[in-house]
Length: 409
Image 1 (cartoon, one colour):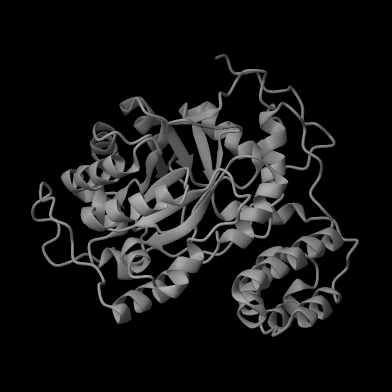
Image 2 (cartoon, helix red, strand yellow):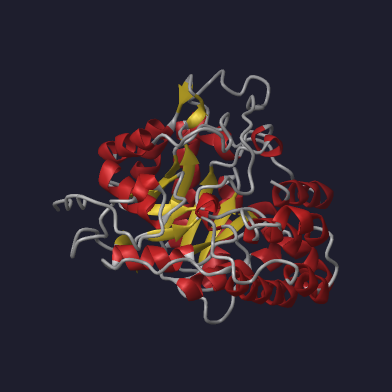
């Protein structure tokens, strides 16, 4: 497929940063739907699974703005199998959520296979395995982004899931590696492909980077060149135009959108527009954003109950008000709200007529710019060929502590 040439000058009506001022919309037939087993995802856009974020409330909101695949937050296999109350709630779905997509976390093939069988029986349409979580509590046990350092373990886990899933597609999502001295994406991707995975998603940062610096889109292109299954690119999709640039630059088969949609669920409408060859409308003014945020709050209260639902919205208020004049002055109040009425009163202090600020398009959301030294079990890297499952949390108390750590990460 040929890539259209950029326009010679910026569209004066386009709401975009200079980086994307002349990026052309998709040409007819330029991008194919994303094929995941029997699923066809059009446009080829996936909501990234994010702990504490992509519950049914936010997924349903994003889905109403656009099309694509909307993945649950990470669900721990052991907590799910033990019937942990929070785990079960986060794995829940609405009757009209189609296709239903769940990301699972685990490092034991027996647990993962058992969980996959139950999910398939429940009618789940897509299952993703988390191999990228960089949270120290996860990597310290040899899970998450530590697993790809052992390709045979990756193969063992994927094999168990694919066997249990039947026709339901299984994918993985991982990072480039532990740090720049130990890049694992190619070997881990090949191992997963060899066991029948339907696609591989790559967050083009290392675990040590966390969310700092720039995503290495070259690594996405490198992985695409190494695999025959679809490759999904993740990292630095802040504007709808970034998705087109990533796919054109790397040849990847779809994009995974994470932090860029926090407080901006209408980003999925803009993505649907540009993939369909349309210039997107400008983002909403603040009064319209308040309507979206209050709708979001009502969905959160329906899911968690009023008290917990409103508390869960506190972090979201920072994202919805990012960059607006005077938002810093009321942010303290917004992060202490205890009721829906508190939310309404705090939002009412800001100018509803203010247009969305251009500076907020690429503003960092949710995660800071720090990096880390990745914590691993002692001797974990001594034998890369070892496929023994690492020991994870098993007791009820361990599972609950683990879930709390993930929801905060």
